[in-house]
Length: 279
Image (cartoon, rainbow, N blue to C red):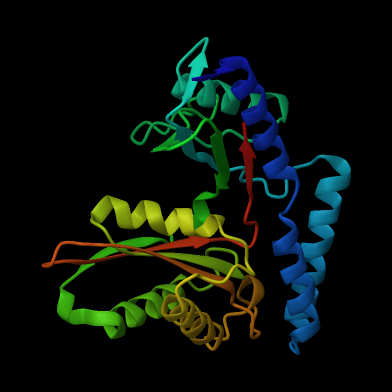
């Protein structure tokens, strides 16, 4: 059994929260540059120039990439042979998040759903746990903004809807979202499981790199099909037109009840902020 001090987790989570809000992932920044060169619409080219400049300024100055520093979402894989000493794993992740958002001067966005009173520390962190074999602890952190999250949906289809029905829903959802999620977006799709698992999988799918190809060739083909269809909507960067409405579509699947066909569409804005650490 391997022991990890809780304070180590607290400090690493705090570092992740600060870095995720200041440093755009390299694959996203590269996608900006690639699409800037490919765009023919002057407005789209200019938006990409501004997005690239914003990312560079954030890294240089330490200012957040976006004023919306998001709710802090964590996916945690805990090895069966790991023990956390000092406090519970949930307490350690939450304490690290509070520390990071305080020391990084990141906007706290968490509030009571009815009174709208801010909790003051961005807590509690939203944490999804998985128990896995081994003696490692892997933590992904995602700073999820409200604008793109509001455009996400879960839908329970009858099995007869098939891929055709799912595809139509996904494209219609992005078309209706328009400029609201700050495109170019990334789209995470959860298919199967049940109501809550489809939603979790749709968000977890967004942790994959933009250039990552799904190991199942049939699913990889569906991802490309949806990406192409979304980009034909001509919404473009920030909704000003252009052929880059979406940078990537990532699908996660799970077995489901024979009477159901769950679908979740999680929309991520262009500021696709996430970090990971392995302890």
